Image (tube, rainbow, N blue to C red):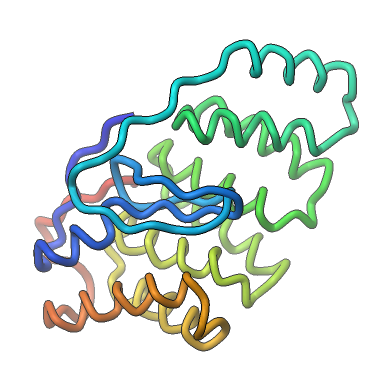
Amino acid sequence: MTRDAVIFGISGTMFGLLAGWIIGSQQARPLPGPVATQQAGASTAGPAQAPAPALDLNRASALEAEAKARPSDPAVREQLGNLYFDAERFDLAIPWYEAAFKLNPRDINVSTDLAVCYYYANNADKALKQIDVSLALDAKHAKTLLNQGIIRAFGKQDLDGALKSWERVLEVAPDSPEAVRARQGIDGLKSSHVSGSAPAGAAGAGS
């Protein structure tokens, strides 16, 4: 999936900080845009992006057969979501994450990864609603809060909202990797002297 550069009228440094973020409960890899979640760790990157891994079609076929044979198993559906997520095929990941979450509606990682997929499917509003579902499960989930800020900033041009999300990360997990990214985002906003909403001419990436 290709995405146009997001322009907020804030510094190029700030864009460089956020444009390559991908945050997950199990993995981290730069994407051609700001956000994501469902593997472990996080990374920052500038405009140069790594290519998406090739989709393992044999693995996908095997997992889909397993899912068909195990209709009540959320784990195999999550594995399929992860497989498509890793290949940046968010459109294919969405139905598997939705199915996994329906079977296990307490799984916050699946919920937040689903939100990220909605974001990359150009539906920031739906992504933020799913983030709310995640936060209802755990209001202190640092990766979810960090992603909420990124989606607010890049999907809705809501820089004040993004700031609040990132400040919340610092409150609930001050020593976490997510706090490092949140501080970078906050510092970028403050150094750019940005307050309030983005300028009227700003272009969004996911709404």
